[in-house]
Length: 315
Image (tube, rainbow, N blue to C red; front, top):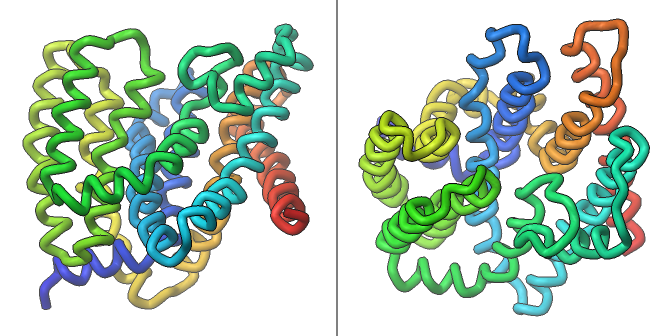
């Protein structure tokens, strides 16, 4: 049995399952900022790599959408998928900002967020980076698709070179670092769809390994942050998850069903998680913060899922 081929097939054929595992890791990792009194939550720090897993699957899945639709239909489908969530998240975030944080904003701020101009610091508030960044990846995707088609694994290497050139000149906070550090794994997702062989993923691991080691050295020297080190481990963590959950994937048992269900609504859960993180600092309940964290998710997630279903139905 070629276990590498089996794991690669598992990775590429079970998007919902591994997206569910990814969103679970993200929620657990965010406990670190919510419950600072208990260091136990730091064990879930690598859960941040769940976003990288999302982007790997985004690159992979967008290829199929681009190849099976006209360019106009491709953009319309992407807009229908992401923009209602962006608009809903923006409105709820501004409501939390006004009602709980008592901060004031203008209509231009809201417009900036709606148009994703806040990503570049052109007005608005930076409530998150992922949704706005994915909009730009959608817009540029046909060009990125051709870039990867032309250069293959070299496109991933080029993206690393550009990334570290950027990091050398720009060290002003985490916002752009969070976004741009994820481009290589996004391109790897595109490449895996185009080549669709276990050897392609092996090539990706071969390219990411020296970058991971280099990033580890940079982290030791204080040049990069710990989260950037975790990002570079994304293909290895996804490979490890595929190995760990190989039995669940093969049998498609209850564990498989639960994580696949979470993966189906991973975007809604992710946005709910961000709203919970914005809400918790402004409320005080006579229960442990962990219970508040869980309870707010139980409140937000069904609401966001229902709202998105309604919006998709009327569009």
